[in-house]
Image (cartoon, rainbow, N blue to C red; front, side, top):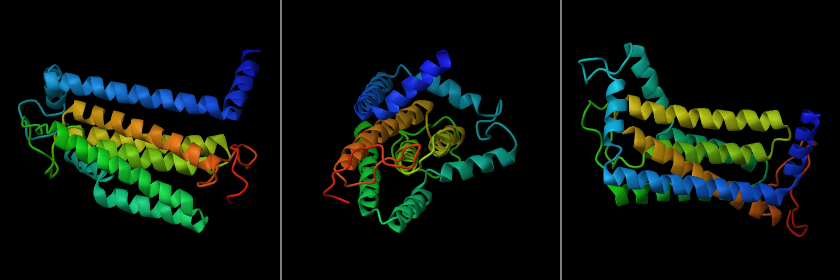
Length: 253
């Protein structure tokens, strides 16, 4: 009985586009609010001890130059942190843009570049605004040259991978396919953030702020994609039957 009610509710939620829009908007607002609260705590210095303790916890006892674990772990973390770097993100963006181009979805391609470009602008402005110094307790395991708060790698990983995950999942008809793509996007985003703290180039709150800002922007991009889909400017979301689940203006194809 409970399972049947849950399935009925789930089908109703999927069919109710406006409710999903409200949920996305609420989540975006919550992420922005959490980012603002965290930024306020960082400015006041109340997170200093937590940041310090977590950073030191990831170092070998008595050796601030040596990250915790064997040498291969540090190498793996460098590989993971590269997933949030400019080169890898650009290649990923171009590859997915090519996917939409092959599907002849020029609107989705343009929206993709606009969404990522907007996230990059927000990250750059935020770094200049807060201008937080990088951690000076430990040796950096990766080259850095910008301010620390929020973590650009963490934020841009969230912006790029989550936005790409959402846009790709929209065109996939099966829920398990959608869930798989979104799960991979979340996993990569989390691993990039963890690697930044492990390598000593960011305070933990820098990474958390990057995740929150990127998550907020990704939800905003979801709202934008749904609004544009209703007007036929981007590809509509596919449902379980492989058909569009959103009304599209008939005048635009």
